[in-house]
Image (tube, rainbow over all chains, first blue to last red; front, side):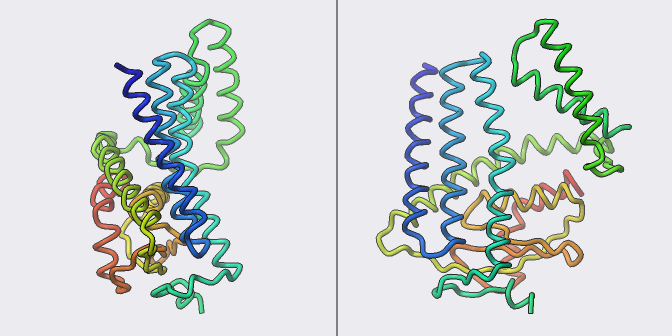
Length: 108
Length: 164
């Protein structure tokens, strides 16, 4: 039973990872690309690791997978934040179809 | 001193989870490494944490994590829809939102949560004014008040109880 649920999580994770990479290619500027790569890849990888935990159970490998989920959830948003902030500070423009940019307005 | 003890407990738990074996030599090495780590890194953290004040407020985390997981899942379905749709239906932009959280931990939690949920990503924090600059994939309103209601409120309600 655990293995079936594990397979479901593995498949879901692979699907989300694939969509995240697809978004990385399709979106127009760095900020939108970060959206797709950070969110989809975080959930996809977490769900692959959760599937691994369901396969392994409470063994050293399974517990390490859970620990990896915790660290992934802590670190992935921070890296997205640092990348987008440094991109904005070094003058990377938003996509031409963007609606507003309050950050640039407040900086000047 | 308090922060050192908390750091020791946290790193020891991490060690135990990493090794997941309860032999004596493992535990002895774990204690030694945790003491070393807590002595070396205590200077990085705040001195007065107030972490142990009103400990029952952490029970709200059990409400927060399912809420967060559900929102995260919805975010990914929405994001996947936008990626796969042939016309790329996006209206991106950076909006400014208000927050009433003051503590560093609370602001970090809020910013990280916003980065992982529907179409929003924190770009910068203005801590003195209590503002967050958020890149929004589908801007519904560039006004500061409306954006605050739409983006921040759901999570801030809960986080205010935990990290007020």
